[in-house]
Length: 494
Ligand SMILES: *Cc1c(COP(=O)(O)O)cnc(C)c1O
Image 1 (cartoon, rainbow, N blue to C red):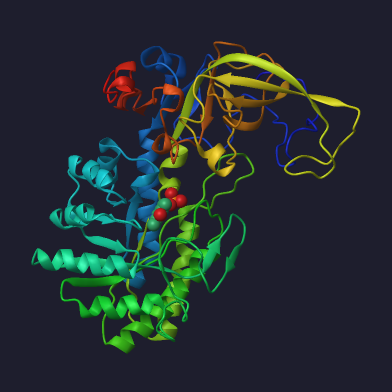
Image 2: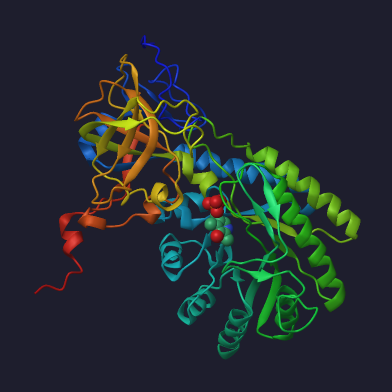
């Protein structure tokens, strides 16, 4: 390994960001399984170097480790099947397509024994093109159009997750007009909000998703919106009510929130079965399992989450004296997020002097001296908020490494920024990069598999990057990058 000069942490760095021991290392568990440095020190996926990938496909580029995707998908299926085997004979895992979807990925999902969760007609179109059977598809959304509902019925979807009383009525009407039946789950809001390291429980929900479980949530005294929906669903002959659904949030590490939500839904499910003399054979506990974006994130292995959730489902069903419903889950980020890094080329570099931060302010470290300034280097890359909107949208943290070579230069606090006309166009807010990073170097930003390509835009008329899948040392484009012609395609001219 290369010898690096030790450097004290920059006072501008956030408290959580340590100066890495080795800037060339690829810290677990941020990177995909097949990523390592080759003998020349160049970052490589399954032996294929990023310099070769750049040569063939250009930058920016999403580089996905296909084997890693498949093994994460399998790991979820296997871990939950095992943990729930004695409870409900296994678990149906729906990959949340909104995190990243194209036909190749939809096909991998099916090949690995998972199902697919969609939330629009467009996502259903991808699923159809990939040849996914309707029975293995779900459709979400708080405002499905009549056309989307009809399409779901045409495709004989396994489940439509209904989000409101309004929608329940619409689905019932559309199904009835067609002389068929819609398979429906009801999305409930259990009032459990999981955060990264804790969860909070509230009775009332102030958000657009789901049917409230709070008893005063409708005009009808004493009846929750959730119960009203159950009652209505059982009264429609065109609705087959499969069961209940909840999704409590995203990027969650601790299993407690999932367990509490499961418990609340089971208690409600048992009460509804009894009161309305029905059987609700299914319960979906959503997605939201967290991944590592930086070295301080500590994701749990699927087996640990599955075991914790199974324990609660097992004991709650025993206490309630009910047969456990078939459990399903909907991981998106935890399957695709870490499989992918974005490859960028470095352009301009700029160092600014910044006043020492006031003590204890915001995300920054404690040390402060009013008369001293500190350097922050801005490293510009050839993409930005158009290929990764998460830092702008959610203040999300990422990390980055020098990918086209190793370096023994000292670490320097850097901010990786894009090329957009927006000062908030930040890719990685704070990261230590080697001091000698220069124009033409390649940077890799890991953890960009979920909600990056999916949220990409053409802001400033930038072409959206392609996605390349690497498997067994071979690269293939699964989504090609846009060309200038694509950018002008919908412009109807003068
Ligand atoms: C977004 C979403 C998911 C997936 O969330 P992840 O954080 O990617 O696991 C699952 N279910 C529903 C209903 C969602 O909205």
